[in-house]
Length: 114
Image (tube, rainbow, N blue to C red; front, side, top):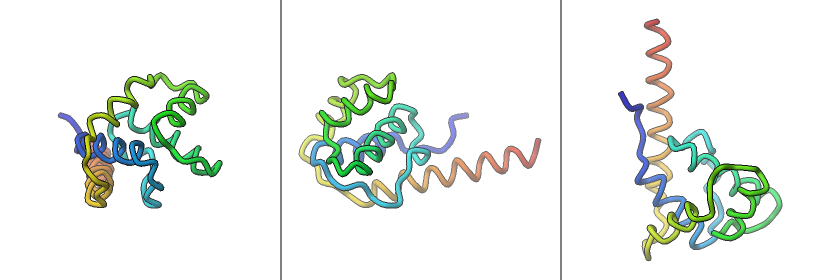
């Protein structure tokens, strides 16, 4: 069974953040993302933010290479292009975090029954 997730919300959120080089929502962390690729991309965005650098398609791709992440620049580019002209929506942050909380609760329940 696939754990709770909202990969479309993850993709949209990251694509818009990268496309518009927006500041990161303060309550978002890599472990909130289900997809490991998305976790790496958010980790790169966070590392750039610490250095005071805006995270866009180019800077994130460079940071991922520095971090020796397996995530390719083409993957980052695809997130940006898939976001189209849509706008940032806080609801997507909430959807990603809610799915992470559900995964955590599911894991805890599974461990309690073992």
